[in-house]
Structures are given as C-alpha cells and as structure tokens.
Length: 184
Figure 1 (cartoon, rainbow, N blue to C red):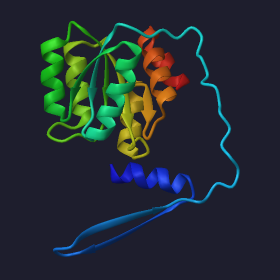
Figure 2 (tube, rainbow, N blue to C red; figure 1 turned 180 degrees about the vertical axis):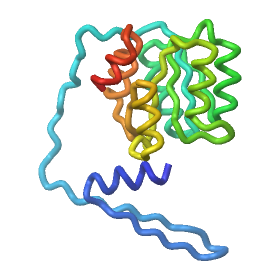
Figure 3 (cartoon, rainbow, N blue to C red; figure 1 turned 90 degrees about the vertical axis):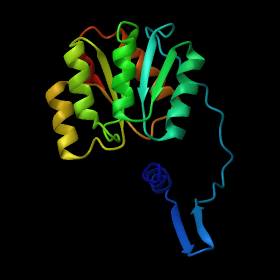
C-alpha cells in the first residue's frame, strides 16, 4: 500500500514526509503541487465492443484497500466477485468454485503462496483458465520473465477505474491469451 501511495505522489510531482517518535506515533504528510487552473470535466470514454456483465471473478489481493476498490468497481458493473487476501486462500477459493470462475485477477507478491506458484497451480487444474495479473511489481526481472513466458495479460498498479474495467472486459472476451497479452 505505501509503495502505491509513494508512486502516485511522485507521479504527481509531490513528496512525502514521515516523522516518528516512540510512544507518540507516526505522522505522514503528503505534499502535492497546487493546481492553478480549474479542472475540466472530462466525459468518460465509452469502449465499444467490450462487454461486461454476469461473469464470476476471483480477486486475490493482499492490500485490503485495493481489494475493496476492485470489488466496488467490478460489482458496480455486474460481476460476481470472490476475494482472497493470500495465495493459499485464493487457491482454496478457486478449487471450491473453479467451475464458476471466469477470470482470476491476482497480485504476484502474495503472502503464504507466491503469485507465480498460485498461477501455476490454477493452470494445473485448468490450463484454459483466464488470468489477469494486477501488480505494482511487474518491472522486477523474475516477474517480467514469468509474464512473458506464460503470456499472461497484466494491469500495472496503481490502476484507474476505466483501466480496470476495460482490461477485465477485454481479457474475458479474448479467446487467445497470447494475443491479448501482446495488446495490453
């Protein structure tokens, strides 16, 4: 969570100051540049040929705030969303509901069962299972190599609402996972 916040703040040319004292607590200050121009309202882009709806998704995300955000966005579209916060919880849920799950969204850095091993095990149960990796760690060489080797589509965190909606819908309608991973 803190890495995502730092990335967002730095991307917006801001800074973070931390101070901590024993028995007093920790103070986090976020400084962002002031915007001198009023924000313009931008109409949301409507994607053509992208469906959404009644599929069941399994979201495996250790950060509870990211998990809640994904659930809120995806349920608002009409998806049924199952959630887990560790790799072993995700695998147990997958095994219990594998016939109903249309797409697995997972982080690669997970407690108890790493994302790469989780994906390998899920693909062992169902080699055709659609999987979308949602991670802030895609730049690490071992993760990049895994994604490339397995042709798994990815979504970099932090992501925005429309990016999540579009990538999930596109992954769901994709027949060829290799083709979709090259487009994303």
